[in-house]
Image (cartoon, rainbow, N blue to C red; front, side):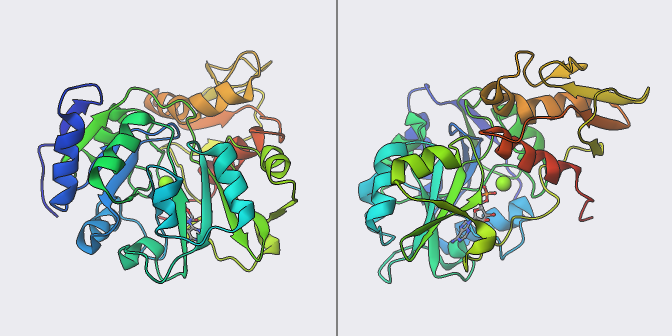
Length: 318
Ligand code: AMP
Ligand code: MG
């Protein structure tokens, strides 16, 4: 694997976007801010560059990537969009909602993006600088989270450097991300909606906008590989539903459980999602033997937070 002197450039700096586009055109990887977490971007039409994403992250090759588009118009060149998906795009794009749709035969997208599936996951990120970059490139970017596979997702440029520094050409620094966890993923098949991954856009909001039921992924034929049991893991093991901590544990609080660090003192789930990965990183850096985490309610955005926590606490793959 090539070694880089990874450049960090502010999203506001003159020429930042054009140098990133140049690097992407030459087949390099650039980490970009989005409203969810930082993404590790390659030009989605370049097979070698997309393969580099898998190599640099150590990502299993059966785990497909999300294509990020600058707008709905760009998506139309790559996927079939049934009316129900159209409604969701109108309501939630740009924003943290990914749709898994049938890929068009004519779609110019590198094969490893879909990891052998006939579908393509598409999303239009809210971060303006990243939409600008995609527009200037003229193609979607394939972009999973910019972290080594299985570890905590990055919510700042420094997090990206800590995990992938020296392995990628550039990081565009856009400060801390607003949502803090990965996008909601909805699979659309035969006019029905299936929740493939919970996020800050909730099932209720989606059902409301679509005027349709959102089914559980278990009820669908859709394969969503790569949703590994162990993921989002800090170095220390994680213990869930804790109301106090042992001497050698650090306690991450929520609401009434104050903890050593809190996800949200007022019990606000949106704030807790925003701070989730940052707080787990901080707790990890405190050097405790284990990280105990207070209960987070299983409703609304709490469903997405619990999904990440459950994977952070699962037995490790290696
Ligand atoms: P990440 O890029 O790490 O946020 O992961 C993206 C996730 O999106 C993958 O792990 C898959 O579960 C899901 N995904 C991406 N593309 C598809 C697809 N074509 N069909 C089903 N799920 C997908
Ligand atoms: Mg990821």
